[in-house]
Amino acid sequence: MVVVSSPHSSNVNLTFEEISAVFEQSYDGILVIDSDTNVVLVNDSYFRITGLDRKDIEGKNLREFVKNSPYKKAACIEALVSKKSVTRTFNNLVPGKIVMITANPILDEDGRVRLVIGNCRDMSEMVQLREQLERAQEIEELYYKSLQDPKATAPITVSSRINEIYHAALKVSSVDINVLITGESGVGKEVLARYIHENSSRKEASFVAVNCGAIPDNLLESEFFGYEGGTFTGALKHGKKGLFETADGGTIFLDEIGDLPLNLQVKLLRALDAGEITRVGANSPTPVNVRIIAATNKDLGNMVRENKFREDLYYRLNVIHFHIPPLRERPEDIRPLCMYFLNEGNRRYGQNKKLSFEVQKKLENYKWPGNIRQLKHVIERMVVLSDGENLELSAFAANDELRNDNIIAAEATDLIMINKYSPIPQVVAEVEKQLLAHAMKQYTSSRQIAKVTGIDQTTVLRKIKKYGLDQLQTEE
Image 1: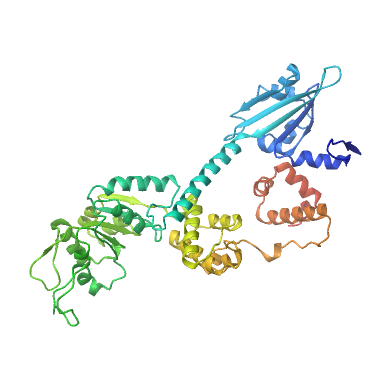
Image 2: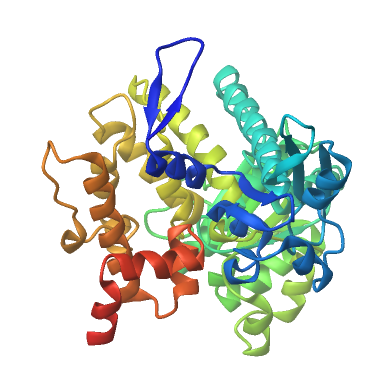
């Protein structure tokens, strides 16, 4: 039994097993050598951070190890020789990691070094945490900006790819030039088109959005260009303005331009080239001054090659081209979008719901085939369906498309059943056993299992043997 005295409390009795558990649970790596540089203690975190194998160093002589390895400097050996604390930083110990090692000597009563304690920390994790904090601050600013200005039209984005697009779009907005926007359905093509319009000299005039695929072919021409009175049965007596005349002086957004029939493509080209349109049934053209922004989720270049889209119209529209990547390729935008739509939903439905970390991670891990439009609808439904203060997983699972895509990965066979009053060590052991057994069903190597469970490979092998799972592996 080891007795540890504390100046602030009565003596606390710790067993060797408890002290070992504390040592192993340290997130920092710890290496202890004696006065002859023999390694006497080392924890799992040390191997996780340094990338070294346990067999190469555990129970070995550190000086001999350093002599036969690429690492010619060892902080622990320097501390042993100098009898002073030594700190060293290594940038090439593990690819992509910055490892800082601090070694402190422990002296006996005669001033001789008895032990040296080496503490190592992955500083790259600290750098990542700092970057995450900065990103979180950006998101917070976006969130509160949306609270203060519900009508703000600035894009809700933090990803560099989308920021670059909007930065270029801002430049383009000041020039009266045609723009083609491509991307999957729901990525925000109309949002970008409105952003260009609202930052242009035409912002005081109309922005007319048209879905070319939603208008029946026999009505397209009259909807686009209008008609004279009495042109056909049911026509208004005094005729009707078309969408181009409605957008005169402003911007017309032609969404799903790839669905436009070839016969109307010819007339659209005429409107672009001549700056005029001819109403159905009219004898003379009408001048119009509009800026055209077109968008599609189709490959117009391929459609041109297949003679499904006019080449001359394609090049007339494709003066400036923006391609918006899908949401799955820019997951860093999911969180700020969630917060924006949550705020919007709370305002609309008179709620005050919050986004929990658990639900947030589920949202970030989903692939979002419907992109931003799908995310908006999901958040909206969760605001309405959740009973508690936070958006709930139960309401989350109520969305059929999410459930069908297995966003919530939970198998009934993997539920861990424990007694309410089971000792904690027993519960921990049972959890470890079941998690390892489940991982062994999906992964064949201990290296893969170590990666998904967050422990080192040696610990995986030791625990598999401890719980008798190696026999299960052999049987299978």
